Image 1 (spheres, each protein chain N blue to C red):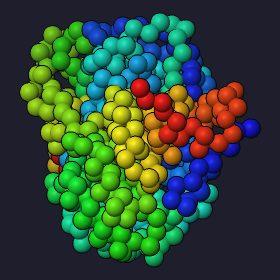
Image 2: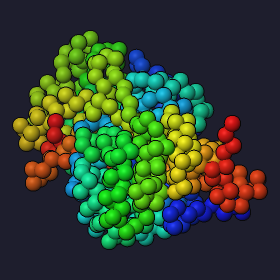
Image 3: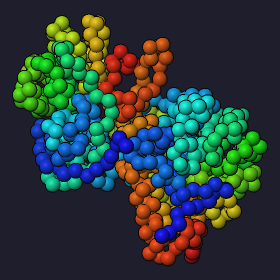
Image 4: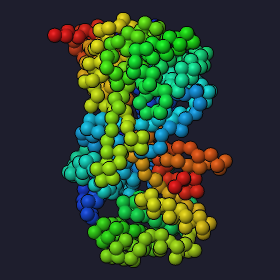
Length: 303
Length: 251
């Protein structure tokens, strides 16, 4: 029987599948389908210092093999989360990752401080949300800003720090190196690609925010390429995500250089996807005499 | 464990009006627990998103779902053959609250009519007002008659039934009823809610919004509500609704 355990920045996961931030809320809804311990971990819905209402609807549009979304970080705020949701999450026997977002560097630092004193296992710094007016992706698109905010948050963060990268950049390897140089313990990538759809009858964008973040199988090849480029540049582990829908996709993303994986959009069509992907992964490993996930990670043989 | 996604057999698929399809899905486990106003989230082959379809009726053995072809997803659904396997998460959301002893008025506009059938079955001799664009889109009239509803048909163009809107009929007959339940286009719901408020009648409305997960996790199907303290906030059609107290909805 294959061992699906992985270790990211000193934190052990029972399997490499982590629910991606934004698709999974704070876990309670999917706990109605299966015990959350089937997941290696949960990256919680992005949390901000104060409660946020999010964007007006519509917040979602379907695309060929994917979706656009612009929720705009609707969340109850960090204090509410720590008090009301975290204690329950910590009982679910899975790794809990706090995904933090903010408008300013100070916001991120205060969030990191608050979560450092909480029971979360890791902190994922979201500097790649394309759907908010200030903050978010504006920190994630240049090496200088990625480096500066990573350095500032690192100084306040006592938990393992994951920096979540945007694909909306010219050179992902340089961005990854900047985060690593300033103290990131791991990277997660890719966040969504900025996209747009227009209703041809009304000539209005389908999403009220005009643009939204593209996710799902449509972005998978982009994600594989970027994980490969970043993994070739840095030594810290990478959590790969972007359109993973099947166990074959999971293997492919691991081969490209990922240590662990996040899945999101596939949950819309199949809430049981994490269970099925784990089963497929385990069978693949058994059939190929692979004893651990680390024997797959980064084994790409590029031409 | 409250939710499950399961494959069920499509036992009948009929086009009952212009672009409107009537599915019967063999589904004992879900049809026996479904409440009026709840919905089924249906996986569409080749599509990333499921399609939320309100429950039109159930007989404890089968689930009846009536939908209109609006885009590629519903087009694919309309072409599924009898015997096909359909992956469904249901029943989802909060439905209509129907109390015994009250006289209800159920109002449906267009493709908002189907969920009113199951709701009307739960009430005693209800007034049912159905509105459609024209005679080509009229559905479910015999079904409402067979459950003993006091049925009114209205069309926007007068091609059959009363020439006018459902709200015109409601205003004339609102004194006959204790409570109103409505499903249909947003402007219709706004007008129904307004009429209910002016006449001090409680009103429940079933809302629609582009939806993702269907269970309340992804937060995309937002709708604005006003709390008792006057504060406005976004709730979600799939988990907090689809049925809301009209007083709370910010139209």
